[in-house]
Image 1 (cartoon, one colour):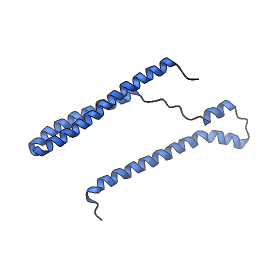
Image 2 (cartoon, one colour):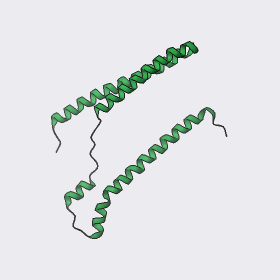
Image 3 (spheres, rainbow, N blue to C red):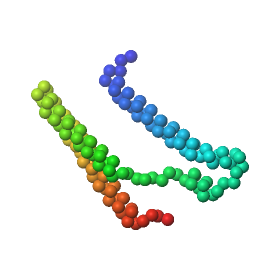
Amino acid sequence: MDFGPFAVAIAFWTFVAIATVAGVVSDYKKRKLALEPLRAAIERGQQLDPAVVERLMAPAADSGVNPLSLRIGGLIVISVAVGVAILSFFLAHIAPIAFYPVMGGALLVLCVGVGLFLASVAAYRHGERKEARGPRV
């Protein structure tokens, strides 16, 4: 059976499916491991402190998006865009028809990098406003 040009697409979507299932299983095992002390205490008939039960049953706090991570990601993606743009000039000497499609790919990657930078600015400003309001009770 020859998959030809579809082999890469099949491999990509297989990877995405495996990564998704692995993430779900990992979250399940972490939650189960976190509740194991509570289950063991109930089985032994020990008195449980309501504060401990509340802390174990509460969902994990969402720390939000780290603006520095977005900025670093933007810098890496913009560097890739510059590299692809330089690649388009080298490819133009071998196959002139490839210049514009590859340069278009570089511009697309550049737009993603700029979007990551803008997202880092927005996340930083949102974090400042959240800190200024204070913790919610």
